[in-house]
Image (cartoon, rainbow, N blue to C red; front, side, top):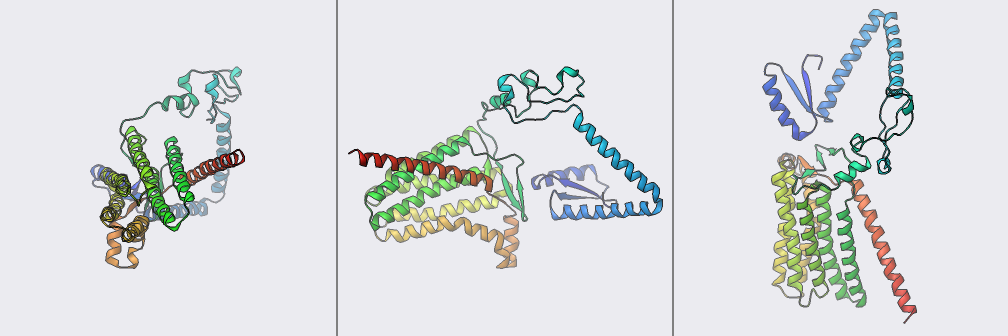
Length: 398
């Protein structure tokens, strides 16, 4: 409530603001109100105005009543301290991230103020499985067996007017992500071994081109997983399809410029166009970030035309088309981000359009990306270290 009597309602997220606005317009037809988004500059301004108003009221009461006001504040402070201490000593459960229920014990601690009797004081007693918290071992074991066939995708985190909005839960590295990373590490090993057997400039060029193609598929897949949360069977099937395309790409990359170039491009474009179609599907499901998703589909479609055209051009002219397609593949996303955040520096009209279209755009979870990078680096070092150890043993034992 503002000093002028106007109510301020707070929407928990931008996507719920319009729903709350329509609901309040129907309920409070004759009463004026403001609707702000939690954490926005308007929310902070309203809080500062209300805070200043109540500070002035408190100072006026202190000037008017003097000693009585000071005595009331002291009593209130002592009462708050006692209430806090009583809360710490009364019966309450402490959630422990332990596997106590795995061994038949409850993961709760009770204090001496327990109503059930002194025998339960400061002890962990056995309870039925339904008494445990959601993060208990048994509950996690039950929940792990359930997976929906399809679940509507949700954005893990996104930017809105310079503010980063994130989901409240922690983002862990899923088991299938590790499997995809292992597949990619194996692809790198196969491609690198073939390049090391024939260290020429032509072989280096083949390695660079095929490496970028496989890396682009892998990085786009990691980006989709980082941006959106689905955790359903349909997502697993889609990942398996992209992994199959990666395997097809691998089988044709070793002789890419001899007689398997068409098959190489076929598998690459199948994976890329599938992800572009998936971006369009997400744009239909999640209108909030539709602008960025459509832009991602466009920057996939443009170089795809160049890749198809490179099939009908002979070497060495083909390398020029490949270089342009790779440049667009690698810098397209950076160009979209520059358009979304720096269009106002180019033109006011363009900046207004970009602010409207890219008002929301997904963000990458840095913690999740760091954990993935550490994991794939660890996997790569162990794999190449093992291969080096095996090669030394073979050299020692001919």
